[in-house]
Image (cartoon, rainbow, N blue to C red; front, side, top):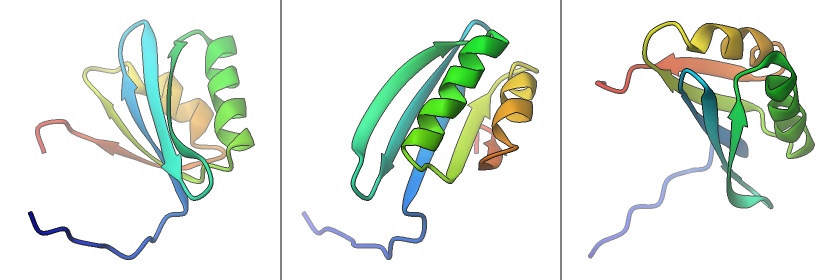
Amino acid sequence: MESNNFELIIKRGCGIDVHEKKVVVTIRGDGIGVETRTFLTFTEDLGELLSWLKSKEVTHGAMESTGVYWKPVYNILSESLNLILVNARH
């Protein structure tokens, strides 16, 4: 099987899957490998998520959500991260 190599543009990023009661986040990047954690959606828990991302020096994220559950997550994380909201259908 042939492998493609792409130029690394974002050094440390994350994927965020937002549910009604939890947020599942996977980080990946230079020097941090791959790690996945789950957080509740209360403000205090989202603050812990933000602290974790900052401690890992994550700068960018792609967030997927159905409904309006993404809004509080986006409001808290977008102050420190470059976030994009994506539609799972796309």
